[in-house]
Amino acid sequence: MVEETKKSPTLAKQPRATDLSVGLNDAKQVAQYIADMSLELRNLAKANKLVTLQGLLEVVFYEAFGAAVQNEVPEGEAERIRALSRASEG
Image (cartoon, rainbow, N blue to C red; front, side, top):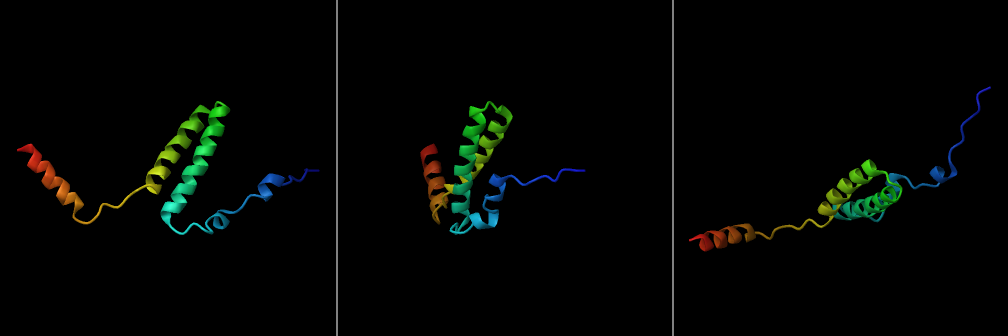
């Protein structure tokens, strides 16, 4: 007789991905949440000497953090910086 596998009680209590999006109103908030979680997981991987996993989670963290803190360049600012650069050259 095949023994029926039981679901882990910890997995049963985990929130679903759609539940986590409640309260996260925009992409920057979601990216910040992912950065926070990936950093915690990276630290866990490092503490347990899971080097490959640690490296992958670092990449996830840097990408998510970059998306979370991304700033918009004000209109006309890029041209102003180019003009300053040209003026300083000669």
